[in-house]
Length: 422
Image (cartoon, rainbow, N blue to C red; front, side):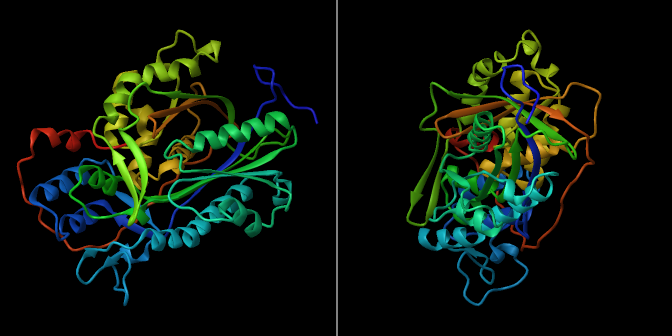
């Protein structure tokens, strides 16, 4: 099968479809804030931090697999949230993980099925590899297996699961897909990232936990990747280059640990500063891969798909790289409408860019995601094919209001109010 070669001598590998999926239950940020601020055991300072973290997050709505968080009806035996008392409960890690196995499977399968349906010329029988990514639960046989069975893929499909990598895992997953296609001209790779971050929500006076509660949400994204010579049915991405950089500091600033009552996030307030100090160096090896980008200002690369770990991270990236407000719109809209869904989030941003109408500018996309390590994953894509229309999603839920007292915040905790996010 003849195919066009890319500039590096390898065959062009194309992301042919990119689809997303979210649960039905919507959380309105302001209402969730009031519930968290009303929790027993929260100090006056804790309530102040809750209000500040939620209000400065840049988020309006998020999605969760936990029907109990709908706040529209009571459950006889609540496990995660007692609506009658507006009290967040503390189920065991085992209980949370059992929900992950059941509800996570649904999201993995839904996103994968949508991605296959949106890839013209490719059927389920064509899939040769499945790569899944997730850090919010574990079970075996895992989501890779569940996708193969649910979509009736060939039992010979090669399966790979990237677990517990954090918010940047979509890039290793896509990089693996490109490697498989570079090695096999007929490969068709199904890539799915799904996270159920809301399973690990808890009430706490700890600033890291409060920030995590204000940011994280549930969602999934899936892509079909192949180098086969098949006509495109719409917008697509050429997977050009990927790079990984570990910053010289930050190992202790971001972590994801397993506790007795769910997974526990470590999210230091210095994370945005680390990104601010090292983002230029992290981009250097990626941009060096393409001579056509040498000497350009960052803003001359038209599209930027930045993982919206938090509002302050997007602010730092925009200011440090001299990007325009418009170039960060896809990331900010994703954060606003969905929150931080860990590994799936940057794929939502990429879909936002794919759905933009043609602008007449260049079609290069520079993308970045950040995670534990501190790890910076970067990628260069080229948008190709016809452009589709814009899409959006909205919704609402109800909750009882709660007045948050104004309390003076000690100076050593003030950074959490403006530098929240990872």
